[in-house]
Length: 336
Ligand code: NAD
Ligand code: UFG
Image (tube, rainbow, N blue to C red; front, side, top):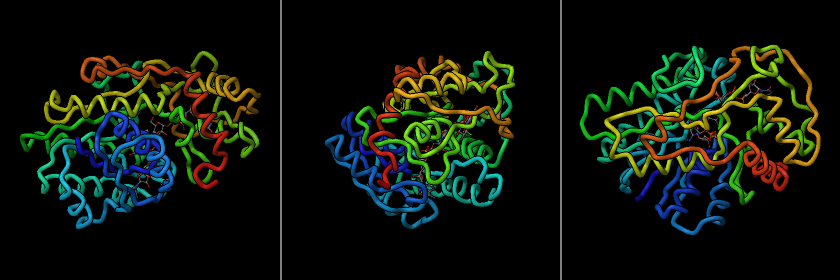
């Protein structure tokens, strides 16, 4: 297939481009490079043979979107968006404009070009306050911050579009916590500034860029008191997208599917596994809870197995080993 990838040079987008090429697809990617480096695209080309074209383009550039869609695609994978929860609280308008209006522009350009097959990056954040674990797709939705609100709004836009017009095939993939890197160690997660997320912070500490990890709360009602999340290897996540692409025909309009491993690990378990992978103790200290964090969330991945024939294969040890290889070989990320 010929696939357009938005947010192609970002963390998950670059891994998806790689797996698309490995699966024999033709890829055109674009990104406005606001949170990524074009170097990731050069590295993907070095890891996989196959056609990968990249353009710098913004979702808010409507004529640019129409022009690129006119190249003719079988499907679109839509990763582009802003994703920092804290920043979204400070700049809700920016998040609405970039993520929601940007996605509306993309859908309109797809419609004009006659392409109605989409795989979208949603998030388990759409489940809001967790009522019961594991979380399946029927769990009530809710927004706990403006970033989460944008995911809800984009999902709703897709549901409404698919109800209103025949022919749309949309997979709304609700990711849990993507971590790790391609096993080749050439592409990985390279957040700008201080990492918000646990794994990059842990790895930057292991490589000596940070003094210690702050564990946000050790008094949660979890086995060791620290937060529990469903970590999923980014390669498994990318392969979940390929599975969705292959099976878009079985989608009835727009449907949501969890992409998670189906088990939770605590912050301390992650630090321990990362220390083992790095072959050194990673220093940490217990700090106050981070406002807005939930105690525990993990996925019920049953529907993904049924609908996509996909399940996560890589465990926490492999996630940490691959994240460490990337960080060790690229201590400053793509900036090195
Ligand atoms: P990322 O920041 O590495 O990638 C997103 C990319 O989108 C970046 O390269 C950025 O430059 C680009 N972008 C942002 N706004 C754009 C615009 N207006 N036009 C063009 N490009 C634009 O983040 P990621 O972790 O790879 O996330 C990819 C998607 O997955 C996002 O939609 C994110 O919300 C979603 N998601 C991520 C996680 C996670 O924990 N990483 C969890 C759930 C969902
Ligand atoms: N944590 C720490 N120290 C850190 C960073 C995180 O202890 O420096 C803890 C958090 O408190 C949490 C766990 O590690 O218990 C995971 O935190 P992350 O920030 O890595 O991930 P979250 O589950 O908080 O957030 C992720 C995405 C969000 C998305 C959310 C949906 O990053 O974009 O999942 O639940 F909204």
